[in-house]
Length: 91
Image (cartoon, rainbow, N blue to C red; front, top):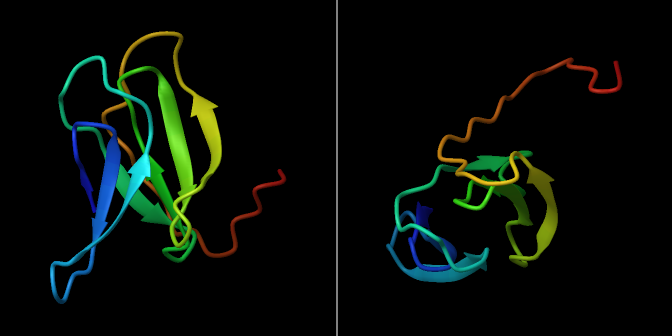
């Protein structure tokens, strides 16, 4: 999966290199690479943007599950996800 610096993130098959789909954000203000990572046992994709939002996509459909507002303006270049067994996110 890579940032395509045009309109989102492209997913490719690792074994063949074949293109699968584009996860569409919105047109970038600046064309610099943004971070992207798999999450939730590879069922979700989390990607940054240059307009202050973090996008969370459903991997199979490519639909946006939700967006997280990081800033009114500015970029989200670095994305990290955590596999935390036993983590209680309700506390």
